[in-house]
Image 1 (cartoon, protein in one colour):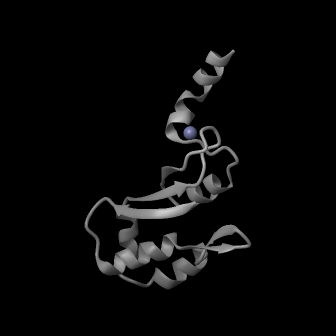
Image 2: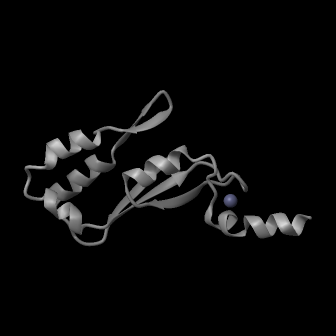
Length: 112
Ligand SMILES: [Zn+2]
């Protein structure tokens, strides 16, 4: 999965952008993507900054590209809400694009 964009719901400062980039930064380790900063490291780095508390008020959408849909094999984009979502989704075996996710059961039924 590849990060395409981070889209905050309002205008934020450069420092806040840097903080959010740190929050979302991932690196590959033996083909497994992990966060560059652990939750604790992130907290330690930013807890004393004035803008950390703003994190609560910023909604951010992270757009990720998934290489391959399990059904149609096309790459597709997905919106990720937070770190926990990214972790669970990247480990999920069933990655489906929006079209296949919605219509998979109907497609399977119509084949029978
Ligand atoms: Zn698909």
